[in-house]
Image 1 (cartoon, rainbow, N blue to C red):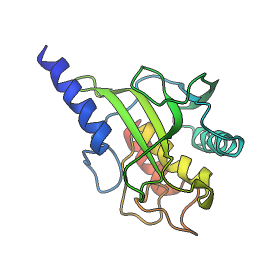
Image 2 (cartoon, rainbow, N blue to C red):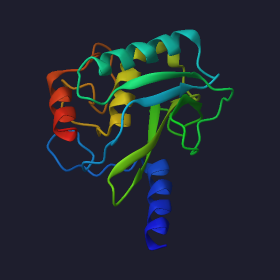
Image 3 (cartoon, rainbow, N blue to C red):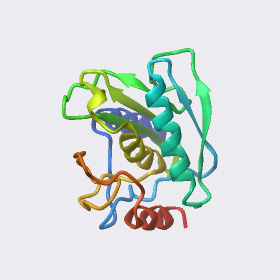
Amino acid sequence: MKNKILLIIIIILSGIFNLIIPNSANAITNNIKWNKSPIVLYATFGLNKNEILALKSAMVEWNSIGNGIFFINGGQLNSKIVSIDGINTVGKAPIVSISTIASTNTRFLIEEREIIEADIALNTNINLTRYNMKTVFMHELGHVLGLADTDEINSIMYRYYYDGGVSQITNYDILDIDSLYK
């Protein structure tokens, strides 16, 4: 019972604050990771064709690093809602901060240190057309895998989006993923 209450509290906190517990100089979230592959991601009907293409392209790039954990496209759900339901979804939702392009919420089992669900929400309160959506999805899929934001400007997991910034997986990201999934 105590573990269930703690898990509920962490789920609430992760939804509000995107709970990140760094334990390295780079971007690993306290060795919390998926214990099984593939990670099936479903797009909601809120995504447009270009966003779906950007998501698929980002999934292919993450899959290309060959760490044993990979994404597959589950297709589209008959829903526009991103929610805690055991299904890994990518969709749109209003995010209070207009400086947040997207948010990834990850649910995990504490004792097992296992991610069990991750949802990506694009912010409906901002104009998304001004951003390179593949870059946004590359970053958010890094969170899905268990990576945190980093201050390393040469990483896809760099905490700030800027025009001309990193738009692909770099050696920094590969080292972090290899360390997490060793």
